[in-house]
Length: 146
Length: 387
Image 1 (spheres, each protein chain N blue to C red):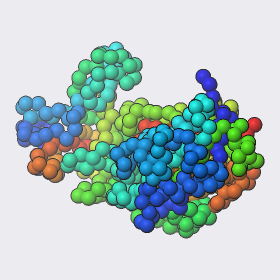
Image 2 (cartoon, chains in turn yellow, purple; image 1 turned 180 degrees about the horizontal axis):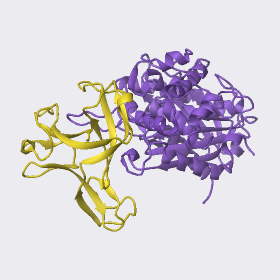
Image 3 (tube, chains in turn red, cyan; image 1 turned 180 degrees about the vertical axis):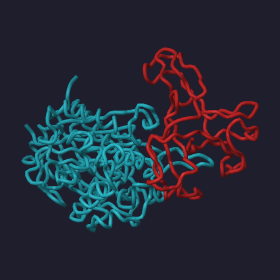
Image 4 (spheres, helix red, strand yellow; image 1 turned 90 degrees about the vertical axis):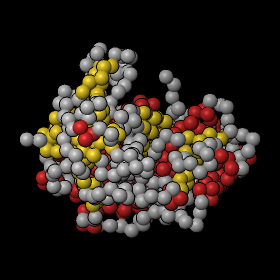
């Protein structure tokens, strides 16, 4: 993991790890969501129809917050080959809407040290592995905030 | 809306031993299960007019050939059903509707999975990614457990009690994969897979197949099991969003798909007090936490009371509702496409008073429940005695 934080020009040239991770031409990264102009519901990623009120073609793309709270977590001790363990798998509710699953960094992998509802922030880093074609990816993580 | 209640009957059931069956392939397994079911029903392959087969992982191009080829069911319909972990039970559901319509008199529902031939040491659920891989099934279900610990004060010991109960039951069943009882200490101190789920909180990887022969009650009355055939009381299935846990409305304290399928099933069967009326339930305990949540979602107790229900013995074979008297997915095994059919074989035999493992006394009404996706689909089938 070399590059740090969002608004980082090092993101240029990296592929986004997920369709909802957007990288601007200036190399600035954010998580993209969509908001229903009819009922106000917010979702992670792009969609054409609101899953809450089923209104079609009223979804607008929005930039999701990089601040949120931990809702649930697990400490993963056994995973797929090549994945470093243990790591903390987390689901975070972002401020203003949007629920995202990802890896929580910079906490001890110990249930005594992880608190439900703890404030976290989204950070962007180069992914630790390349794909089979040698492409490099920008990914997102969470870390405790403040 | 109409109802399937009392319109279809189980003529016969068959199930292979579950486990790491290196000496058998998927075709061998489906032949073993289907012929056991046909022998039990007193019919031959010529009597089977149509077949539905549940199977998740492809071995014959995702087609009806999964059952038609090994059983040589040529010149008649066979349909492969895939609906995640509910595949086998959905095969049964479709077979029931076909018989109830009057289009066929005798059909087969079956399911098979040969997980040993798929490879891998566990079931992947979250989609893989070229560099970030994916999440394992235990890592997904563990998230529900930590939230329940937080909300309800449940502990690792509450989870371990489910494993101890299901091992106790499975040890008595000659067809179960794992046949050794375990202690609470063994379960609670097992190596961690994904906190708070350890080795004994997870079901194993098993091969197996199961089959049921289905007809209408008027035909069952003249069949081999004329004095003890079971009938369907409800066939429910409910979908939810794919991976509903990634939606803001998901509270990680239960599965809306199970809650919806249970509601449908109880309405169809005319059940108003599930804990009082249902004698046994084979529920989808892919993980110990899932069994506890299923108990709540199926309305056997209030939300938040699931761990207490198990702790107080209400889920035991002689408890209020015997939960997984076969040993469940935990101990009997979980060859995905076969599981739903395996559960219904067990429920049928329990109602007939000829359970191969622990027999629930005076079992009259039993349930099979699957949860798949995880969380995308749930099926609930209720079987009982004819009116």
